[in-house]
Length: 314
Image (tube, rainbow, N blue to C red):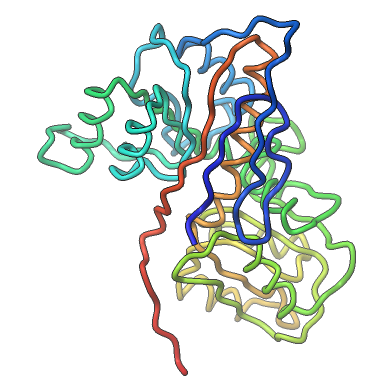
């Protein structure tokens, strides 16, 4: 199943995530008392900075404006996980003047953006179509209401706190989250809950641990989180939900586990971060509406998970 289409043109349009991984769709008219108008890209950048400050990004990360002129008018914004050519084409065809993606297009240095390379074709498509590209990556992970906050909320966690605090943020900001379920449940039932909240992808959900073991304290990190095992153990989590768990880190985590804990739930990188998009679109819509701007905001319907099918025993 691909993520569902989201159109948010006013505040409070998206209040959660459906069990099938889609979003609740709604349009709230702008206030009749406040004249609404389009915004410039520069004004959009200020609104984004208010929600996801670049100062929260990790030192190794590349966030911010990739292509676009600050004076250009913006009436349509699209959110996506990846700036793939398919996603860019979707944004262009819809008429978006700004594409906001979680993952960077240019993480490493390049010596050419010639259209003979995939990255070059992406840059050319963006500039030639007049579509700006903005990256909100680890600043979107760390901020309040960020990727892991949304994942924790979708799983029903309470008393949530960061796994590691941001160097330049508030106490509640940082990478990863840990919190508690209202009631203990078996690892098997919890894994089913994880599966149920995520958009459907080929890789599904992989689990390491006793299916009948009871879990209540849950650590999560949207995207690849195998660098946080020390923090997960220190949090006394019963289970750790993250993506892209490789053989050796997962094997070593099992060896270091105390009484088998933390159990591991490995999910799709794309799926774990896609959950943030509807919430991010709604948050930006709220800020822009408060500032008197009338901007259409939509979540990409492109499933950019790189895997198409999987073979399993039996």
